[in-house]
Image (tube, rainbow, N blue to C red; front, top):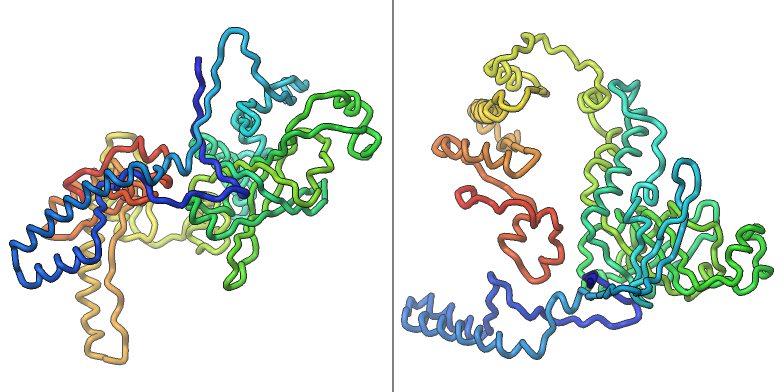
Length: 467
């Protein structure tokens, strides 16, 4: 049995091969400047014979370019990805590093690292238990009602950290940086640090994610306790006995990146600061704090942390949003009470600034949403008709043209509404907007495959009639 890994690995000490990908994109055709000028001139003169000849030359040049770049440029995968294999046979010795975890209140040995070769290992600790490595233990459960939005923030910020850590590891889109120099604050009780990444490296390595919203697995290979008496303050008697005569080990720490101060104008370096969340062993090798020590850092991008940002910015929200979050009673608007029928639901949604319509599957919530969009459109038309009076007074600025934004939890749910609204195309003008991931799948460009997450590849493609 052979195990295969394909990972994005970049080194601070090696130069990056900055070449174009071998396979041209299906929507991109390279054209020389002279040929482009000839084509533009022929189009202006409406010389169809010259236009046809230019198109033939473009096709011929495209075929010749495909043949010439085969032996010159390396592909995107060859530049950004490294493939590693491990062959397992009967009697094969697999090198691992053991750690401990609590099970039923007792420490038990578990595999912490799997060593594939001298330059590549896999941290099974954060793969197996990302919540314990990257988030704090939650002490308070969620509640049906909250006294204030501060209480809501304190509880749900920790719950969202758990959800973010789990989802980030589920995607398995980590990037490995070799030869990273870290500056530490030397406070072992609250260990923090930072390292620099140039803007050129960030661009060449196609690091398109937010580096201040990532998880880090920091590793330092080939560490060994040379003399227990040289550093007694880090060890107690039991740890000295355990580490004496041991094989070289890899020091492992897990961290969460934090937002640094705004860089100065013209600064070519990005400062990535982080806070250590978990260290598996209490012993910290002295080489960790030495200047010039090169670390291996596995960067695990978070998924779009929308929930964390929403909870963090809740203090800036209006009272309506805070009341909804804390499940407190909303303000009375002296309107008729809600009715279970769809017509009543539509009327309430059009009249009130905020309405929650709840119902089991198949009760027609999507149909209600379609009618709500239509009646909002009618209200906007009435608003535009009443705003014509602004034209009589040139000192007053006319109001902005209103629009309606319909959002849904999935592409399929929004597609259903968009298909129904297309039937009213003569009345209103629907525009279906997809996410960046969907657009990159339909209209790829050079390097866009590095930005696609695995979930987007599993989603259905956009429907042709909605484009």
